[in-house]
Length: 368
Image (cartoon, rainbow, N blue to C red; front, side, top):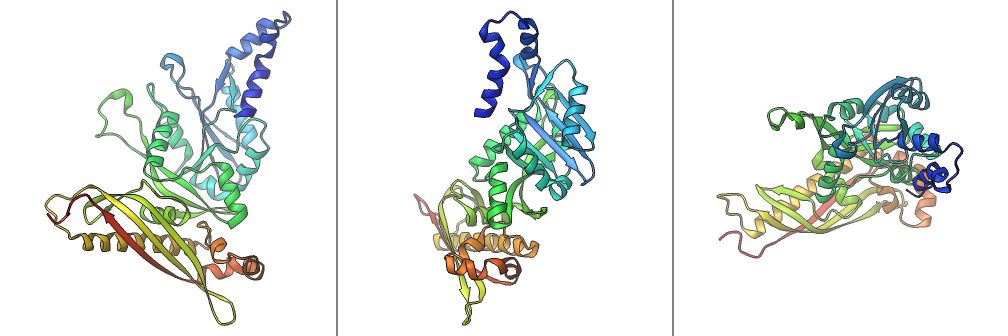
C-alpha cells in the first residue's frame, strides 16, 4: 500500500507544484488512470491469458472487464492497454489475483517471481485458485450492477467469518519456502439462474471450494471442504467455523491441535501423533431430534477426527506437506538437522494417529 501511495503521489506531483508546463497534460493523465482491482491469469506453460476488472466506478459506472491472450504476462499487460487507449491502466491497487487451475499447476513459481519483481503489484495481494479458468470467474461474474471484485469481497468476508483463511501471495511464498507446501483458498464459479431473480444481478457467483494444495512446482491437488476444515484446525485458529453434526449446527468456540512425532528405537520417524481439543456451541438444534449431551460430544469428536485424518492423508497422497507437519514433528534443531533433508521422502509413509476430545457447551439440556 505504501508503494501504491508513493506512485500515486508521483503522478499527482506536477499538479501540486503548480508548474504551468505540461499541467493540462498531467491532469489529463491523472484523470485517465483506471484502477485494476482484480486480475486473473490462465496459462499452459507456453502462453498466458490475462483477465482484468477495474471494479465499479463512481455513481455505479460499470466496471471495465477485458481479457487478452499473449505470450507472457508483460505482453498481456501491453495488449490490455492497447484495448483501452482512452485509459491508463493502473495495477497498484489489485486486491485479488486469481490463478486458473492450469496456471496454478504450471505457472505458480513464475507468477510469484513476477509479482515480487513488479514495481506496482504487491505481494500482500490476496491469491485464490479457481477450479476451472480465471477468465470464467472474472468475465462470467461481471454485469452492469456488480463485478468480480464485489463478489470476491463478499465471498472473502463470508469465508473469513466462517473461519476460512484467505492467503496472500507473500504468505503462500513463505510457506512454500519453509515447508515445501502451501494452502490457498480455492473457489468455483456457481450459476445463479433459478436462485437470483433480479436481471441485473443474475451474473454467476463465486463460492469457496476448499483449499488448493500447492507445491514448489505448482498445484498438486485440492482438499474437499470437510478436509479443508480439518486442515484449518491443524494449521491455525478455527474459531468461528460452523459445522453440522448429526443435524445440529455447531460453532467452534476454540480449538487446539498438538502435533508430535513418533520415533523408532533408532530414532527414525515412524509416525505422527495429533491430539485435538475443541469446544463448540449449539447454534441450531435439529428439529425432532433428542440427542444426549454425551452422544453429541462423541459425534463431534468423531466428525472432526475424520476431517483432520482426511486432510493429513490427502496431503500424504499428494506428497506435499502443505500443513506444515514437518516443522512440528522435527521440532528441535537436532531432529531438523538429522531428518530435514529426508522429510520429503519420509512424509508420505508415516502413520498418522488422530485423537479428538470434543465438547459441546449448552445453556440447556439438549435432551429436554
